[in-house]
Length: 166
Ligand code: FES
Ligand code: FES
Image (cartoon, rainbow, N blue to C red):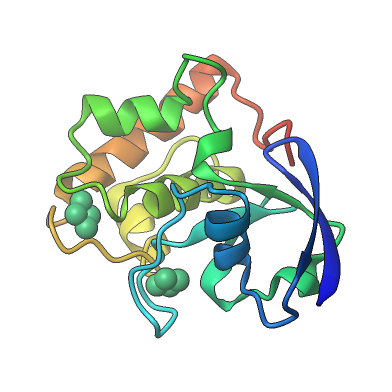
Protein backbone atom coordinates (compact mmCIF):
# COMPACT_ATOMS: atom_id res chain seq x y z
CA UNK A 1 0.00 0.00 0.00
CA UNK A 2 1.01 3.56 -0.60
CA UNK A 3 -0.48 6.86 0.43
CA UNK A 4 -1.94 9.27 -2.09
CA UNK A 5 -3.17 12.80 -1.41
CA UNK A 6 -5.27 14.69 -3.92
CA UNK A 7 -7.64 17.62 -4.01
CA UNK A 8 -10.87 16.34 -5.56
CA UNK A 9 -13.61 18.82 -6.38
CA UNK A 10 -12.01 21.24 -3.97
CA UNK A 11 -11.77 18.76 -1.10
CA UNK A 12 -8.48 17.40 0.22
CA UNK A 13 -8.45 13.59 0.33
CA UNK A 14 -5.78 11.18 1.50
CA UNK A 15 -5.97 7.40 1.29
CA UNK A 16 -3.80 4.32 1.48
CA UNK A 17 -4.15 2.46 -1.82
CA UNK A 18 -2.61 -0.32 -3.86
CA UNK A 19 0.02 1.37 -6.06
CA UNK A 20 -1.67 -0.18 -9.11
CA UNK A 21 -4.91 1.72 -8.46
CA UNK A 22 -6.07 3.70 -11.47
CA UNK A 23 -7.37 7.21 -10.94
CA UNK A 24 -10.81 6.15 -12.15
CA UNK A 25 -10.87 3.33 -9.59
CA UNK A 26 -9.81 5.72 -6.86
CA UNK A 27 -12.57 8.15 -7.77
CA UNK A 28 -15.30 5.55 -8.14
CA UNK A 29 -14.38 3.01 -5.48
CA UNK A 30 -12.59 4.99 -2.79
CA UNK A 31 -14.47 8.27 -3.10
CA UNK A 32 -17.76 6.91 -4.51
CA UNK A 33 -17.74 9.56 -7.24
CA UNK A 34 -19.46 7.31 -9.74
CA UNK A 35 -20.21 9.98 -12.34
CA UNK A 36 -16.87 9.14 -13.94
CA UNK A 37 -17.52 6.03 -16.04
CA UNK A 38 -15.53 3.18 -17.54
CA UNK A 39 -16.72 2.33 -21.04
CA UNK A 40 -13.79 0.43 -22.51
CA UNK A 41 -10.46 -1.17 -21.70
CA UNK A 42 -8.63 0.28 -24.66
CA UNK A 43 -8.43 3.98 -23.74
CA UNK A 44 -10.72 4.93 -26.61
CA UNK A 45 -14.18 5.87 -25.32
CA UNK A 46 -13.56 8.92 -23.12
CA UNK A 47 -16.28 8.05 -20.59
CA UNK A 48 -13.61 8.38 -17.89
CA UNK A 49 -12.45 11.93 -18.68
CA UNK A 50 -11.78 14.18 -15.69
CA UNK A 51 -9.75 17.35 -15.31
CA UNK A 52 -6.32 17.00 -13.79
CA UNK A 53 -4.82 20.35 -12.80
CA UNK A 54 -7.26 21.93 -15.21
CA UNK A 55 -6.68 19.69 -18.23
CA UNK A 56 -8.74 16.79 -19.52
CA UNK A 57 -7.23 13.35 -18.99
CA UNK A 58 -8.49 9.80 -19.34
CA UNK A 59 -8.58 8.59 -15.76
CA UNK A 60 -8.59 4.95 -16.89
CA UNK A 61 -4.99 5.27 -18.02
CA UNK A 62 -3.73 7.36 -15.12
CA UNK A 63 -2.31 5.82 -11.97
CA UNK A 64 -3.58 7.58 -8.85
CA UNK A 65 -0.10 7.56 -7.29
CA UNK A 66 1.35 9.18 -10.39
CA UNK A 67 -0.77 12.28 -9.81
CA UNK A 68 -0.20 12.55 -6.06
CA UNK A 69 -0.57 16.18 -4.98
CA UNK A 70 -2.69 17.16 -7.99
CA UNK A 71 -6.15 18.68 -8.23
CA UNK A 72 -8.90 16.67 -9.89
CA UNK A 73 -12.31 17.86 -10.99
CA UNK A 74 -14.98 15.30 -11.84
CA UNK A 75 -18.44 15.81 -13.29
CA UNK A 76 -19.72 16.06 -9.71
CA UNK A 77 -17.56 19.16 -9.21
CA UNK A 78 -18.85 21.19 -12.16
CA UNK A 79 -22.17 22.47 -10.86
CA UNK A 80 -22.42 25.26 -8.31
CA UNK A 81 -24.87 23.93 -5.76
CA UNK A 82 -28.18 23.47 -7.57
CA UNK A 83 -27.06 25.53 -10.58
CA UNK A 84 -25.77 23.42 -13.44
CA UNK A 85 -22.57 24.47 -15.18
CA UNK A 86 -23.41 26.19 -18.51
CA UNK A 87 -22.10 23.18 -20.43
CA UNK A 88 -24.30 20.81 -18.41
CA UNK A 89 -27.27 23.09 -19.01
CA UNK A 90 -26.53 23.15 -22.75
CA UNK A 91 -26.52 19.33 -22.91
CA UNK A 92 -29.85 19.30 -21.12
CA UNK A 93 -31.32 22.04 -23.30
CA UNK A 94 -30.15 20.60 -26.63
CA UNK A 95 -30.81 16.94 -25.81
CA UNK A 96 -27.13 16.08 -26.10
CA UNK A 97 -27.63 12.67 -24.55
CA UNK A 98 -29.75 9.55 -24.69
CA UNK A 99 -28.61 6.86 -22.26
CA UNK A 100 -26.19 9.31 -20.63
CA UNK A 101 -23.33 6.88 -20.19
CA UNK A 102 -20.86 8.92 -22.25
CA UNK A 103 -22.18 12.26 -21.01
CA UNK A 104 -19.90 12.97 -18.02
CA UNK A 105 -16.83 12.41 -20.17
CA UNK A 106 -18.33 14.38 -23.05
CA UNK A 107 -19.03 17.35 -20.79
CA UNK A 108 -15.59 17.29 -19.14
CA UNK A 109 -13.97 17.12 -22.59
CA UNK A 110 -16.24 19.90 -23.86
CA UNK A 111 -15.29 22.24 -21.01
CA UNK A 112 -11.62 21.47 -21.68
CA UNK A 113 -12.22 22.20 -25.36
CA UNK A 114 -13.58 25.64 -24.48
CA UNK A 115 -10.63 26.24 -22.17
CA UNK A 116 -8.24 25.48 -25.03
CA UNK A 117 -10.09 26.76 -28.06
CA UNK A 118 -12.35 29.55 -26.86
CA UNK A 119 -16.04 30.28 -26.76
CA UNK A 120 -16.80 30.33 -30.48
CA UNK A 121 -16.57 26.79 -31.75
CA UNK A 122 -17.69 25.68 -35.21
CA UNK A 123 -18.97 22.20 -36.00
CA UNK A 124 -15.75 21.03 -37.68
CA UNK A 125 -13.63 22.10 -34.71
CA UNK A 126 -15.95 20.39 -32.24
CA UNK A 127 -16.09 17.13 -34.20
CA UNK A 128 -12.31 17.01 -34.62
CA UNK A 129 -11.61 17.86 -31.01
CA UNK A 130 -14.09 15.30 -29.74
CA UNK A 131 -12.37 12.36 -31.39
CA UNK A 132 -11.36 10.89 -28.02
CA UNK A 133 -14.97 10.56 -26.88
CA UNK A 134 -17.34 7.93 -28.23
CA UNK A 135 -21.13 7.92 -27.99
CA UNK A 136 -23.01 4.80 -29.00
CA UNK A 137 -26.47 6.42 -28.90
CA UNK A 138 -26.82 9.89 -30.28
CA UNK A 139 -25.15 10.16 -33.68
CA UNK A 140 -23.33 13.20 -32.22
CA UNK A 141 -25.56 15.80 -33.89
CA UNK A 142 -27.08 17.12 -30.68
CA UNK A 143 -23.82 16.75 -28.78
CA UNK A 144 -22.15 19.09 -31.28
CA UNK A 145 -25.03 21.55 -30.97
CA UNK A 146 -24.86 21.36 -27.18
CA UNK A 147 -21.12 22.00 -27.09
CA UNK A 148 -21.38 24.99 -29.42
CA UNK A 149 -24.17 26.44 -27.27
CA UNK A 150 -22.41 25.58 -24.02
CA UNK A 151 -19.22 27.27 -25.17
CA UNK A 152 -21.13 30.47 -25.99
CA UNK A 153 -23.00 30.28 -22.70
CA UNK A 154 -19.74 29.89 -20.78
CA UNK A 155 -18.59 33.11 -22.41
CA UNK A 156 -21.81 34.96 -21.56
CA UNK A 157 -21.77 33.67 -18.00
CA UNK A 158 -18.16 34.62 -17.58
CA UNK A 159 -17.65 31.06 -16.44
CA UNK A 160 -14.05 30.72 -15.34
CA UNK A 161 -12.02 28.91 -17.94
CA UNK A 162 -10.53 26.94 -15.07
CA UNK A 163 -12.77 25.63 -12.33
CA UNK A 164 -12.12 26.92 -8.83
CA UNK A 165 -11.46 23.39 -7.70
CA UNK A 166 -8.60 23.13 -10.14
S1 FES B 1 -12.81 4.07 -19.95
FE1 FES B 1 -11.23 5.49 -20.32
S2 FES B 1 -11.18 5.73 -22.46
FE2 FES B 1 -12.74 4.25 -22.13
S1 FES C 1 -25.78 8.95 -24.77
FE1 FES C 1 -25.58 6.79 -24.69
S2 FES C 1 -23.46 6.47 -25.05
FE2 FES C 1 -23.74 8.56 -25.44
